[in-house]
Image (cartoon, rainbow, N blue to C red; front, side, top):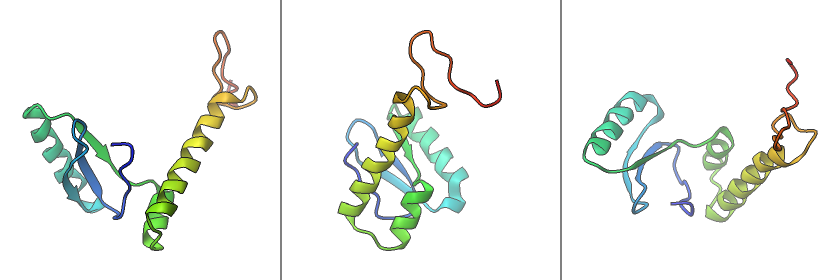
Amino acid sequence: MENHLRTQNQIELIDRGTGTVLAQFPFDQEDKAYKEAEQFEAMGIDIEWRRPSVAETLAIELGKGPEHMANLKAELHAEVESHNELPESCCYQAEGHKPNLKND
């Protein structure tokens, strides 16, 4: 679920209903992880696919703990959301407003 914090640099298949990590795979086994996810979904399990971001990967490799990871996740979320809220942002979309895309 949302409070799940990564402690490893792996792909995780998570049951959306329970938040349980059903399987973990190294990055180089992405195809195997995808096939496993398909099998879980064929059994009627709603799967969430989680793979750490570049920032998360670095923090994990540096040995940062759960508190640091929670702060990092909150900061990344706030940064992304701020791009949706500022009218001068390339991602801002108010009703009837066209995003400020550089290649218009």
